Image (spheres, rainbow, N blue to C red):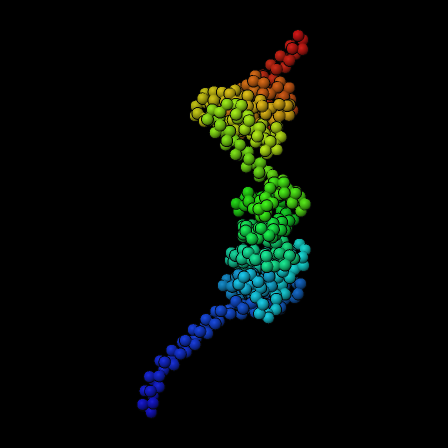
Length: 423
């Protein structure tokens, strides 16, 4: 008995080792299939909900979060809730005989009203209850967007609509769309088709300024053209495409962005030209090219010319220096300004621009009258433009102060005018 006991005791360590190996291999097998097990738990949850009752679907998912490991399997959760299944390598939905989820974005009807009801479940689940899931939600969407060439057109449209609503409600960042800059997706036209549906859904909830702000924060406001296939990246096609999609406001937003960018480039270049002492004729030639290139109206472009001119000044710190510098710059650049101030509308626009500029730059506020006098003396603006500004053309910026400043000069103009008539 004692010998047998000793024999068994010698064998126990070996048996124990076998058990450990079996347990480890079992854990490995379980780890491999755990997402599938998680999927079964989610499907069971969704099957318990009343079909079409989105409040009940949310409630069931909310309760299931107490037992299912949402934090660990967040991306799997959202693959199911977005596509109806778990993604296999390569982006297709795993086809292992399991049922598809009765609730998913892909199972919604292909219209915004239906997609909205589905999106609301995500808003409640992530926005109210499980905020820590936001990151895995964004990662899931980025992963899905790599494979839009694998989905049906209607599935892509529903996913794009949902993303537009998610982004407009700030559940996710619009920068998830940068995944669509992948060359093969752009080349096939899929990226453009997808973002068009995203923007349409976004603009059904928010205005173009809100969309523009989101794009700017994500550093995408100057990259819209990159969604177009390389052979279609021109301004004319951009405008025709989005106007045909009934998104004229996006075209106007893009055009304004382009103009702002061109304005900054123009101002910077003119500053350099003036500092390098290029002749007025050379500066005018460059500015006329820019005005034509940007399809600017003269009454708008003269404001750009004024800003270019004034930003080229290295202002001194003493008050008498500032006055002298400002008046000298206006006089020296009067030939340039005159080339872009050729009609009454433009003359008034320039006087208003100078008013706004002097109001915003307080060091120039008390020199407004002298500046306008120089513009008058150098034949940049006419007497009639000044009188019109004084009587009903002044803008609100410092209006009372500037009208009072200009009063003696205006009275003098009227006196000169009446004397001319008598003569």
